[in-house]
Image (cartoon, rainbow, N blue to C red; front, side, top):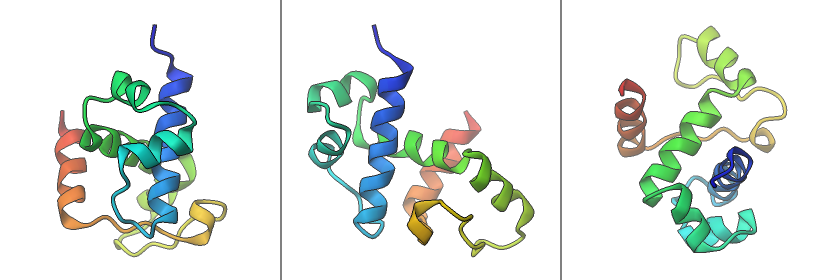
Length: 106
C-alpha cells in the first residue's frame, strides 16, 4: 500500500534538490538519494520525472505561506516568504510553468 507520508517525503526531497541545484532539473537518482528511498520506490509513486516535478511544484505552490504571498502579489517577482527555500525563490522556466498550468487545469 502506498503511503501519503512517503509520497510527501519524495516530493519535498525533489523540491529540496531542485532548490539546492539552482533550479536545474534533478535526476531520479538524486531525488531518491535525498528522500532516502530507492529509484523503484520513486517510480511506485510517480510514473515519470515530469509527474514528480509537477506534483512537487504544485505542492510547493499550495503551501500556505507561498499561496498567501502569491495571492497577495500582482507580479511574478514576489519575494519569498520567510522560511521558504532558505531565502531563495525558485523561478520556473517557461516549459515547467506550462506543465504546471496544464496539470492544475485537470
